[in-house]
Image (cartoon, rainbow, N blue to C red; front, top):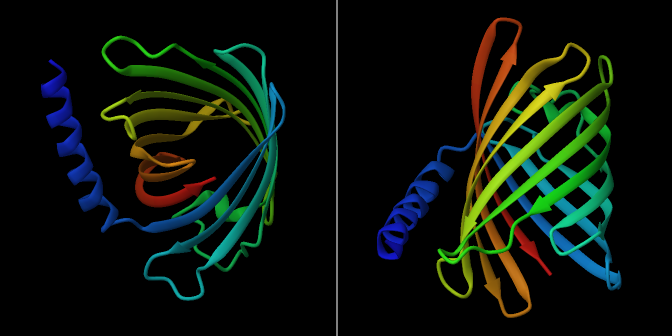
Length: 216
């Protein structure tokens, strides 16, 4: 059974590589986590993003957060993020471009790793976005992910995350994630591809995003 799972995951990694070449947005990030006390951790992120085939579409984000571990399987977190994006970039590809400041509060649950190598995680998030143009937005997001310990250093994963816009009580976006984390001694490298369905009035549009993140 494990051999079948390994072949399926290897195939998905090839699919991920192929999909990344057709992404409409590319993300490059660096994450740094620092444990302050045994259960409290500071998390910093810096990302450079670009919209493919659009002039002057580079922009960056900086995020500072804290994560408190209540137990081995339960934690709470919060973050604030600032973006250098400007309204001239096409918002259709990524609605986050219009966010100047973003505040989040998370409640996280995870299981122990099962005997078959899988682990389940769930992140419930409240998000308030102060935008450049238009009205500020309030979301509730719920990200459910499953990862598999393929080798000692490689953990592929899949995830799904709906965005509920509280202003009108409708699902605004639905994201599907396919990626993998690779341990590099004390650091980590992550590849991720995102398929995003977004509703606007009665229309639904699909967008594709790829990212590479280095964590230390």
